Image (tube, rainbow, N blue to C red; front, side, top):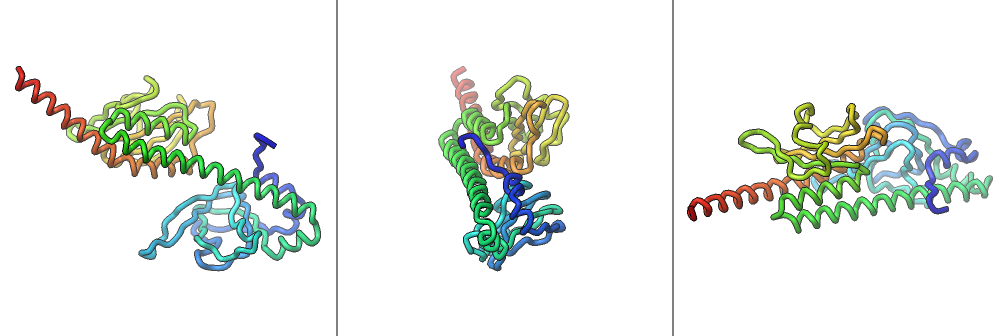
Length: 282
């Protein structure tokens, strides 16, 4: 049905799942499974958050995703794939529901209609996740492309960056402020509203990525290394920002910081050149 979103609660309502699945609790840092190992369970995350990581060529673990409450993990097990291509570790204390492959096959044998309903709901959730991932990847690609197009246009670069981040995080407004390394002050390069200005940062800790709810709405603050800061906002009537959105903006900000810094430096050099030429003419 168009517009109908399947959730984990729909899966938990299936009698066979509730009877055959086992609830587990993990402490922060505990592994659900490790990369390269076998695990024959399908999971529904009930509480807490799980980080997904892979090993780099240097042998270090790199976090590539997070799984939140109401999301699925290990759905490949349902097709018999038990070798894990990545590690899953509890980012906080986690409570989850685990359905083994043996119990899944038992469900098929004992409750065919329930099994079909279960698989259709899992498929619906997986399709929705893929759709959301595709939207994010397209947005990130567009941001990367536009950062190249506008690398010599600081205002155009910041305008495009903010508009894309607003769409990506379902924000309502945004601002980019650039830091003057000599005076240690900030100036607005682009803002979608006069309500967001350099005056806003007087009451904020802009040295660390964060999101919070203030008296006028929800804010997400992301520094651009030493170059400046990005602030996104939502009305108080909307939902607050989430960890996943903070991490997504942080990833994009890290990529954008160097380009914005270069564009800012070129803009200053261009202004100095123009000023020098005017002095020569005078």
